[in-house]
Length: 66
Image (cartoon, rainbow, N blue to C red; front, side, top):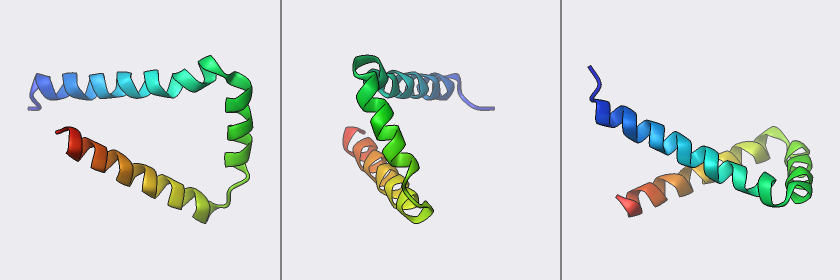
């Protein structure tokens, strides 16, 4: 059985992710829409590279914080 504190941490992480993801469209929706259009124009390899470095940055940040 998974400890309830783990579920609380996962829930808090998900909540923070949603808050952070919502800041840009809330503050500047036009700029956010332009960036989404640019992202849609990336090919699969470019998207994978962006995703990889995003995960790597998140992992490093998590290591630094913990």
